[in-house]
Length: 293
Image: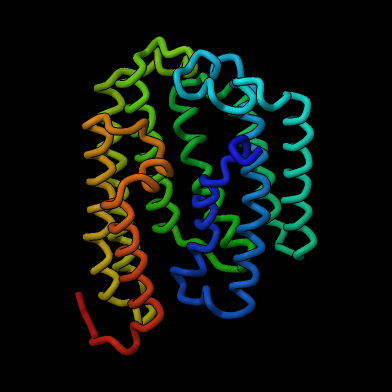
């Protein structure tokens, strides 16, 4: 069951705490409690999404050299049991959000995430570009859900930076799959609509946009403890994107951001450095020397 729910992918749900973290209020008691509930509720729903995806993909996954080992594709977990499990997890996650008296827009965000991803599994995964944008939207839904849940406004630059970064990783994933399995891959029919030059061009475009939007987000901050100082996090972001690019280009993985992050020590170190510098600036910036642009 744990493999079906892909609990290792719960690391992506930490994004629900990102708005509070970047505002510098995550560790206030009420905000931290709200972020924790948001994380748990979104984890329940996202696990249901993975189960639904495996139900729809079971026949195609059976043709894949690695995905054929997934619980449903291998026959280790029944389809009926998976449907019941997905329904229970979805209901539990949404109910948890409602009982926590989260704002209406938080409910809209998590319900939209569920609906969009079910539609993806049901057929939109085979529509070129739509599949990449839906993969990227999962990160955006997490950001907005956490922001709505904790009562924090999402700025335009944060939204654009996260969305561009998500598109970068999604395009990288497709690029890896195309290079490794070819356009006729049985478990990913949408690959026949892509070419390596097309994915490469947009992959690099999304990378550049991510850096640009993140830079604009850092320099437009008006809170005095962060003004100028967040620029020191930019090299870490560039390193993370460049390291992922290197791994994609050398074909050492299938491009899945979570699997790459969990298995590459340099990416882990880059991510830790990025979070650490942000933490020092956002929570202890008032004690640091003033920096101006």
